[in-house]
Length: 282
Ligand code: NAI
Image (tube, rainbow, N blue to C red; front, side):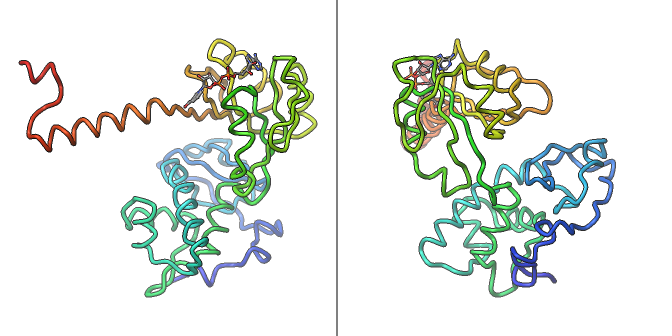
């Protein structure tokens, strides 16, 4: 059985030295996966598609399923919390509890990263942080552009947590001239007319949209045309993007609505009745 301790340390990691193992062709029944290219970028690869075949030197020959990728940031957050408490090894049960998943799923997820832990000892927290970060492409500093320097943009710019998680706010753009030149966090607001030039000169691949909904699609189109391939959208609308561009949408009101549903159900269970007026009155 391989173990976290037996795996190559960062300095010896073949994907860092460029001597990565040859990748096998994905079998036809392989589900759609996200893989990490030699440039550290996450790429979508399908069932033996040309794109998948072109991934030379990838450190994850079997690919990492999308559902696993979605859980990796949750594991990372739990691991950071453990590391901050001075915990150096963690069992799969403990980590699963901290991350809020079942331990069989966690072990399977981590096996995609080549991490199996050591029986009776568990996982080396520091090394697992490295492995998960590497899988997510976080072992480099991603320059990010935020478009929209309003309430939300300002809060994001002032949030120090991005830097320690592998992101650097390279630019903050707004169409309001009165905001241009203002210092927010570590950046100075620049006019949105500079978007294309800034994206190109800073090699920005990730854009954050924090503008009002009516302006969001046009901002998105400009980001994509400028070369941005990953977008975090806060505006309350569904963006249309071409193939090859990934969009993640953040909507706190949806999260609150889901919580409201659970709160309502719990209240109904406690009082042994439905809280749905339509059903209650039926
Ligand atoms: P805000 O009105 O304070 O700021 C919006 C900023 O965008 C302004 O500074 C404005 O000048 C700028 N802007 C407008 N059009 C632009 C363009 N074409 N190019 C560049 N900049 C432009 O609004 P706030 O509160 O910061 O919200 C921003 C967006 O985030 C809104 O769409 C809002 O609905 C959304 N939002 C989403 C949340 C979520 O949970 N998803 C939570 C809070 C806000």
